[in-house]
Image (cartoon, rainbow, N blue to C red; front, side):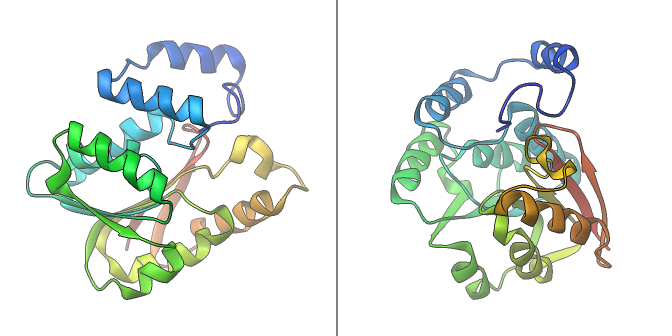
Length: 213
C-alpha cells in the first residue's frame, strides 16, 4: 500500500484515479477494511487489478507469489488465471496464513492455492517447478535475492511483477532507510537485468513489470 494517496502522483490526479477505480466485490472490500484496521500491507486496489488483468491476458496458469499476507493478491491472481490454475504462495506468518485461508475459501478458490509456509529465501531453493508469472511483494531488502531465485523457475516469456518500487517516492531521493536504499539498488538491477525487458510504472506505490527474454 502507498504511505499516502498522493505519495507518487499529485493529489488532484491521485484523487481522480481513486474515484475512477471501481469498488471490488464484498469480499475484496472486506479484505481491504481488515488490512487497514490491522495495518496489514496489501497491494493497492489498482495494483491488484493490474495483476489480475495481466494474469488473464498472458494466459498464465501457474504463478509464484512471494509474500501472501491475507491473500488479497492471491484472490486476484487466481480469478485472473481461471480454472485449472495454481498460485504457489510463500508466507511465514501463521496469523496471515489463517486469515488468507479463510478468505480464499470464501472466494471458492482453495483448489487454486498452495501455501508454502516459511521465509521465502528458505522456501524458494526447495521449489523445482516452472511458472508463468512471478509476483514479488515481501521484505524489500531481499527483493534482488527473490528475483535471482525466481527467474530460473520462470518460463521464457513469463511475466515478473514487483510491488512498492517507488516506496512512497522515497527512492527518488539521495538518502533513506535500509528499505529505501535496497529498493533504489534493486530498481537499477531490475531495469538493466540481461534476462528481462523491464519497466517501473507509477502505478500504486510503484510497480515493476517485466517479461523474461
